[in-house]
Length: 594
Image (cartoon, rainbow, N blue to C red; front, side, top):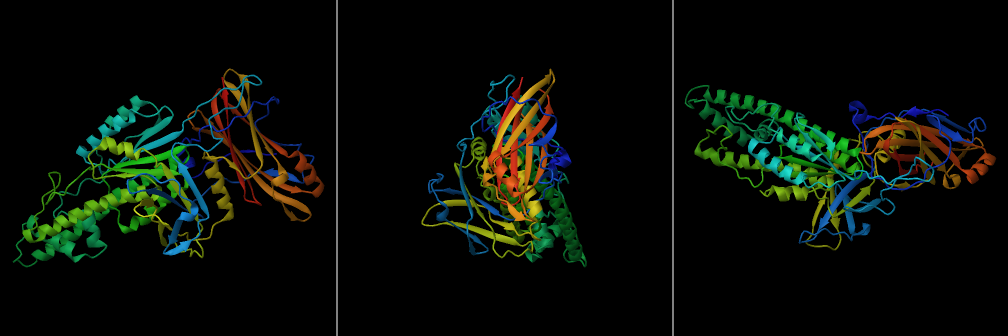
């Protein structure tokens, strides 16, 4: 029987980031078997059934895909209270206006765990002895958009965040990230480090400000001029250029010079704005990826004044929401501007506008529209993932309280698009509720269709990866997990994971006179803080004769996997998937080695 170290793909492999798993949910007594060697083996011995059962290595790379579209929904009544008693039949879901059959439905209550998911531990220094082990249950990533934040706004949100983080619960872990990437604190419960990191935050625009340009063309106006051929925006900017350049409208060539200045300013604004927007979205995507490997409740709090997102980055926003939804990561957003107003001609931080009285009103309208569009990305990300959006309010203490609270009830609707064209097009989604009036409803706004058919192999790999880095218990296959450890020395020990599979309810395919099915078994270890330690994947190919299957149905099969570790507390995660029924089981255990 061969084994291999489990290889992590995507951002985990590339960046070697520590991964976290769920809080302990299950108790298994220590076993009294003798220590096992590093690796995996099947019992009875392989030489007895070598032709009928075998194992081999397989790559463990994963990639994203769309097969089941998940739509998180938060429903509140007229007074703002969450509604948590709705059933699947109460919802209607539309894809591009066409009703869809809801094939997956669940409701999550904030702060609660499903039955049987209490913390526990398995393992002992002596037979029969076990020690309880507490693991982190909640992870929050505070993402400060220092690329777009102004100093006065950053100072206020930094102080409010410090007061909020001081009240963090013992089982919470929080991290501080920034869109510039220059200030960062990985997940920890050290409050002193939080305050120290917050004090290092400062505005860090990447491309520098274009406010001193003549004419003053904002990113929003540049998009109107370059991408939408908006003649009104172009005319207002041309008037500004004529004034700030001191051109005489009566002189030949003055208008052409002003218009050329507008085109140049618009090109610079588009280039700089695109760069900062894409960097901010990429950092947000990376934060969602990192949180996908954490256990328990996972959320991002995006602290930002907002930033304009033109049409060509729509796909990036949808991709972030889709990744977050599939990983059960909620994105919350806090508009750092608070209750803001538009100052005609710009405030003291901006260069003055030189447009005449006739164009001044139009310029103010563009400024107002641009400010509103900045907040759109915050609202879309929050609503699309079931999160909260706090804006137009200067009470930032209350703001952090609201965005840090998960919805009391979160409905998850899932559907498989019918006759889906694999063209990569955007699909608008709409969710309604039958028979309820005066409610507010937050749900994702759409998704992108894939550009090619799903690969069954890639689908299986993604399902296994999602299950490995999850707290969820699954019982599709009859699997039992037991753990044990043995001290080898003062600084070394062996952790053994024993998995017993009952074949009574496993589906086999009859071919060439054999009963065929493949099993993929992944055993993973995580430390007491949920950081990824190691994992081993094993594939078992079963080609059983009828008489062998009859015997195996009675006895089952046992797989043993051993890890060499240092003393400490470890979470054990087991995932088993079969190829024929495409069913999966996932279990949790733990060992504490003194």
